[in-house]
Image (cartoon, rainbow, N blue to C red):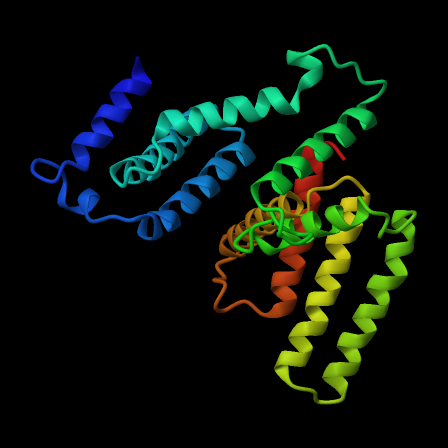
Amino acid sequence: MPINELLSIMAHLRDPQNGCPWDIKQTWQSIIPHTLEEVYEVADAIDRNDATALCDELGDLLFQIVFLAQIASEQGLFDFHDVARGVAGKMVRRHPHVFGDTVFASEQEQKQAWESIKQAERTEKDASGHFFDGIPQAMPALRRSQKIQQRAARVGFDWEHWGQVIPKILEELDEVRAAVGNGESSTRIEEEVGDVLMGATNLARLLGVNAENALRVSNRKFEQRFLQVEALLLTEGISLDEASLVQMENAWEVAKKEEKGMNGS
């Protein structure tokens, strides 16, 4: 099986006598930046709707998982098969309506049961844990913001409607303006800007939007549009370094119109 071949290759790469010097010296800590990079490359392939690239990037990500499991196996902690067994058991437990006789009356009831099962698993792991256990500190900040807000909402600490968040965001923007106007420290201004971003992620959550995905899409849109601005200016013999702000803004509006035309809107 291909997975067994991959596991064998990984073990060979880490072999102290005949392996690769670079692979041999790696640790969990040194590997994790590469793992995160591969996750981003998977997301990028999905954003581009590139199936060929996605297949390739998923392979690279799988290799990272195999790598981390191999290091654990060498220390007698667990191996790749333990990882697979663990997640398989977890999926069966969390889907009693698929792998058991449980019947849910609605999708909402199913989601509530899913969260209850997850909470029971967290409690079993560490009964002394705090309310936000299981939401990694290393998670991208926008995603983590939505996660902690979701967790708080489960016990009723939430807005009744997304529209109630808009005034709160405007209030936070006023506090940014006041902090800047009062000449407050950069740390204080950073804190106020953070409150604005958290309000925005809360709004996204209540609208059913993944804030991390939304910003990634907007980043890509800005990047593509700005590259179009550069191309439009070059047709007039003007480089970005030479262009005035007015010229760039005019090209930006042209790029926006062309983009809308391509999208049929």
